[in-house]
Image 1 (spheres, rainbow, N blue to C red):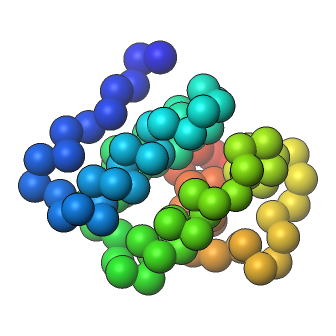
Image 2 (tube, rainbow, N blue to C red; image 1 turned 120 degrees about the vertical axis):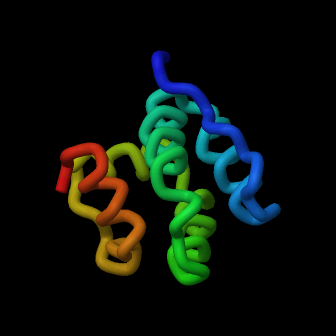
Length: 93
């Protein structure tokens, strides 16, 4: 993997935790999808976006990968701003 986890220096504890969890999902593909997004966006996310991202971390990797890759439609209750941003970030919007 060519991308690496950005430094967590200067981030508050909540953002540090989310950055780490983004890169340590258990499924390598999801590490990349969420990790590269978090590298780029975690610093500027609002409290509401952070809450959405935290909730997204509870979704099992296989389901989330299908949603974010566009293999299946994102369920309406999960089609929030963060999911749309991740999809757009990776060109699956």
